[in-house]
Image 1: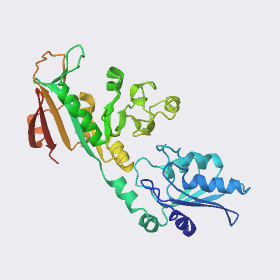
Image 2: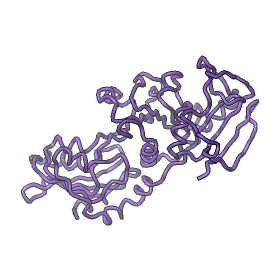
Image 3: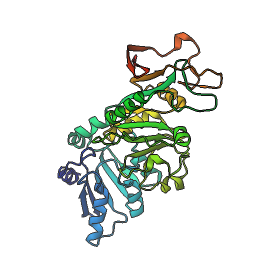
Image 4: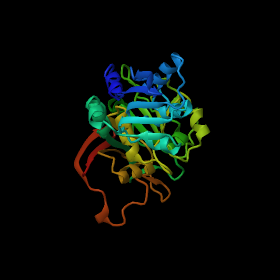
Length: 352
């Protein structure tokens, strides 16, 4: 493990962690490696490749690695646990547990009867990964953007919602997307409107585009995946068909964020671990309700158009069950108001 720690210090692949790995068999070192750069193979893979490059048999060896092996598909790299299982490694010893909530590598290895021991040097391994740990632990700032009529409707009884807010408000939303750097919607928004969710501002990068889809029902040909920038993410659950996950290929990063449904708190922590600092939710009323119920929201942006829609079947701006009593309503603070063309933009902070 001392050698693995020394190897880990050879590179700084931030926002990924520094990781070193050493393979041992029959009392001798057969392979070594470290994570060189974000997007390149992880330390475990490098050590396996190094052993094979030198003609060593990896099966029944012991892997010493400074960080718990990843068990999820990252932006550009597959999970290391799969490579470990496929290689026939018999035992894994790891220095520190990964603070990323998506990582459960030790549990997965043990489930496949691979001995996984650790953490055995948490302090030493954590000392070289302070920035990564802070990045993972820091919750991104989350805001909800909503557009509604003056009577609180987001769509008519037939589902028509274009356009409730005015052109000036829509241009402002594009600037907000560029500022936030990440936009989140639900699967229903993709299926109904098929948006691109781009900023469309010259000289500004498009945001990360995140779809909350527990059943993985969005089509691979949706416009949200058309950009080739690698910034599309699907948050799904354990119910998602494995074959459908594979069908996305390089179109999107698929994150498993819950057993039956997407746990928005896990998702937000995972996005923070990827370096995403601000998220703008532009989903429908059910995603709005779920985000508020999960307690992940810091601010509301509410565009109010000078229109009356009416109708019992028209959709309200917030879905879900709602509060049973007025006393149970969510408290808002720091109200602000400004004009946006013919609309009003109301801003509130959530009382934490």
